[in-house]
Image (cartoon, rainbow over all chains, first blue to last red; front, side):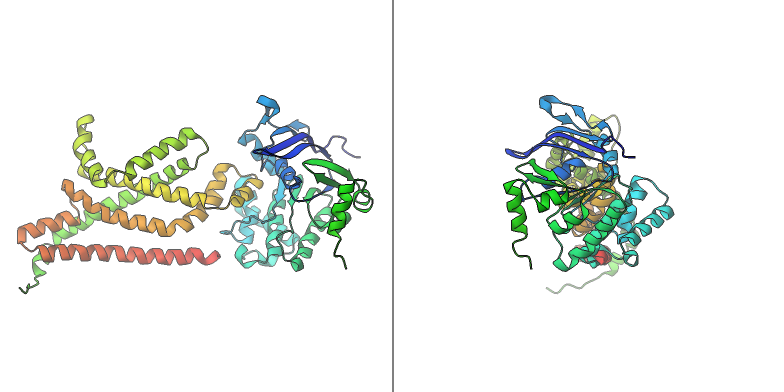
Length: 259
Length: 221
C-alpha cells in the first residue's frame, strides 16, 4: 500500500543570489520510491533546487517539509530561519552526490565511506569498516578500498562518492549532475551504478543532462525554466511528447547530433 | 692581524653552554606548543562566522604582529608585575612575549590554510551529516595542516631564533651564556661563533625532519 504522505514536500520555494532570482516558487511533492529527473538549461535553477533540499543552500523563502515536519522557524519577510543543529540530522537523511565528487583526498576510498558511519553515527570502527566495504562492493569497487582518490578514475571517484552517501542509509538521494565532469567513456559505469540503486526502489532526485538515462530510470521528469517548473509528467509525456515550446526546443538541442 | 682561534676557552665552559642549551630548548618547547595551539584558536576565530568572535581575534593579530617581540618581553617582565600582585618570572615573561607573537603569525597561517580548502570539501562533509566542528576536525584541518606545513616549519624556526631575545632580561639561554663566556674570557670571536654553530646544529635537523614529514604526507596525492 502506498504511503499517502509525501516524504518531501516543497512549497513556494524561492532563492535569490543577490539580485538574481534563481528559484521563483517551486512546489513539489516527492513520494517514497519516486525517481525524479530534473531537466533544464543552465541557469534554470535545477542545481539550486536540489541544493536547497539538503540545505547546501539556505532557501530564501518557502517551505521544505520532510516526512510531515516543516523545517525551520518562521522569520521576518516570509523567510524561514534555519539553525545548524536542526539541519545536521536532516542532511543525514538526505544523501547527496556532487558533480565534482567532493571526496576527501586525505582518506582512502574505504576511509571516505567509513567516515559517516564512524564519525557521524558513532559506529564502532570494525562495524563501520564492514559496512563501508559492503557499500564499496555494491558499487563494484571493493578491490579499490585502500586506494586514495588521486589514484582513482573520475568514474571510480563518483562511485566511491555514491558509496559514501549510501553508507548513511539516506531516505532520499540527490544526484547533482553526477556525470557532467566525467570523460564520456566513464559516464556509463556511473549511470549503471545509479540504475542499480533505482532497481532497489530508492527515492532519488537527479539533475542530469543525460536525457536517455532520465527516460529509462526516472518515474517522473520535471522541466525547469527561469526558476519555475515549466512542465512535468512521466518520461514519455515530457520527453516524447512535450507540451511546451521551450521543453521541445531543449530536447531538440540535446538530440541535435545523435547518430 | 691574524687571529689565533682558541675554542678551548669556550669548551672549558661547557657546563654553562649546556645550561644555556637547556634553557633555549625549554623556552622553545613552551613557545612552540603555546604559539601553535593559540595560533590554531586564533585562526579558527578569524574564520568564524560571528563578528563577535572574528573581530577581537583580528585585533589580537594586528596588535601582536605590529609590535616588536623584544618590547613585549620587556613589557611582560618589567611592566606587567607592576600591574599584577605577583612577580612574573624571566621564563614566563619571555614565553608570553614569544608565544603571543607566534600565535598572531601562526593564526594567520591557520586562517589562510583553512580558507584555502575548496568549499566542496565542506559540502562533502556536511552532506554526510557532519556538524561544522566535525567537518573542521576530520576534513578541513587535516588537509589544511598539510598545506601549511612549510609555513609552520618556518614559524618553528623563527620561534627557535626568537628565544635569543630572552637574553635581554638575562634569562639563561644560549646567547646569554655566550655573552657571559665572552665577557669573562675576552674571547667574543670564539664564543659567538660557537653559539652560532650550536644554533645551526639544533635547527638543521629540525628542517630536515619537516622535509621528511612533507614527503610522507604527500603520499596520498
